[in-house]
Image 1: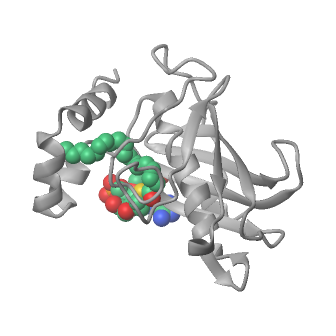
Image 2 (image 1 turned 90 degrees about the vertical axis):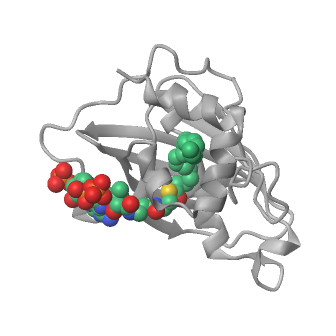
Image 3 (image 1 turned 45 degrees about the vertical axis):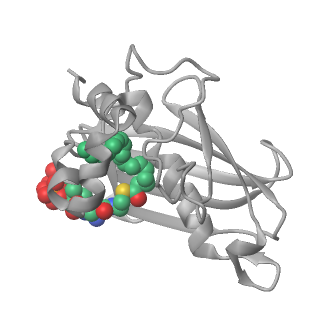
Length: 191
Ligand SMILES: CCCCC/C=C\C/C=C\C/C=C\C/C=C\CCCC(=O)SCCNC(=O)CCNC(=O)[C@H](O)C(C)(C)COP(=O)(O)OP(=O)(O)OC[C@H]1O[C@@H](n2cnc3c(N)ncnc32)[C@H](O)[C@@H]1OP(=O)(O)O
């Protein structure tokens, strides 16, 4: 792990937000067209994460023929995306909006097409706007062998990050969607 992913002195353990979804509760998609979790994204991974105890989530993702890098094997970038998305959904438990600053991935075993990848992620520490987290993807079941793992640094942002940087067409559509508005607002009221 690089020094950038080692929590600095003064980092604190994460605190589960009192209004975080209960353990077992599905988190839903943060954006319908998200490549990682959006239901309205035909090319996406359709990852479905759920809350766990503490500041942790689990998710499953099945590798299909659309995700190949080598014949019959998942593309590493797709696996990194699955880890990134699972890690990104930890924001629901802290009730903060955060984007990936750094993602360091270990590819431990090849993952064949047809494999259900069992993902789990947890926040390990928080320092100001910096959120340190780790994730694993296992095959054969939630306790199966680790195929991929990642350490990551997420940076807390305000909803303006998206409004200021996103293409206007999609931003306007998202702002007009009551469901997206409701979700964005839920994060912004974080004290
Ligand atoms: C109305 C529309 C609403 C739509 C939204 C709807 C709902 C929202 C809900 C949830 C959505 C949220 C996330 C999506 C969830 C999952 C998807 C997967 C996650 C992703 O896929 S997300 C896409 C990829 N991601 C990016 O697109 C980021 C591009 N990037 C930037 O936008 C900036 O780069 C930013 C903001 C990261 C930082 O910029 P900044 O100016 O705010 O802050 P600054 O640079 O000062 O950094 C502050 C401290 O972080 C340290 N730091 C920063 N970057 C670092 C790095 N790379 N390595 C090591 N340390 C780093 C500094 O060293 C400093 O540390 P220190 O405080 O100790 O000095």
